[in-house]
Image (cartoon, rainbow, N blue to C red; front, top):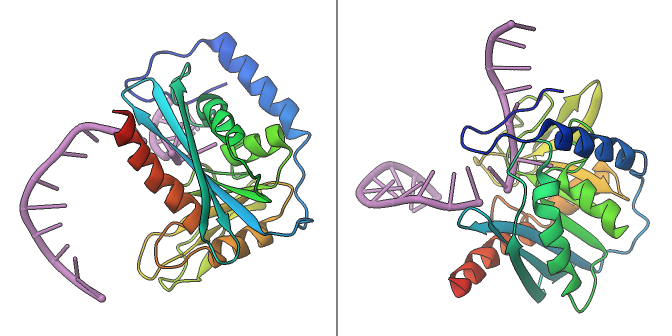
Length: 228
DNA sequence: GCGACAG
DNA sequence: ATCTTGTCGC
């Protein structure tokens, strides 16, 4: 198994990588992509930032839908164990995100995660990984492609083009704002691409990132300063 | 064998 | 993710 290792991260143990890959193959069997069976009243957005090299701070923001008004925001920080390795992001960030999630007083009907859903080599982007752990509908909104090919969508807001990987459309490259780089929208778990795309568009008000993840990113920066 | 590579 | 200043444009 070949995997990419960022220039400055410690060399991952081959035995560990084999174990994590096996776990993704097991989890892959439980992914459910279907037409949504939930009523979207509350949507959550989550994101993580780092304080130094090994301390992660994760945030969950809860919003009403479709009004998109913030009703709750929580965070949690802890030390991380694994380095960042493309394709294995969830093993590095999901543990802390789950701890932050537990602090929510109310639980969302859907979680929008910063990162990919099934648009991943083994369909296990962090959004899908979280969805399986929480048995909750999730979708991913990433700023950069991980796998697949696509053509640039038109430069006007609302334009989109499919992201294809192994002859399957695994995400939509969506222009959420005029003349701004598009985002990659994919279903994570318990929903499908069509629904994920619809929600992403409905949450794209005046910025590139849909409100849930944009606000989570915003508060991550705010809380980070409070901790320092 | 040579690139590409979420956050 | 993070390190970082000024600068172009709505």
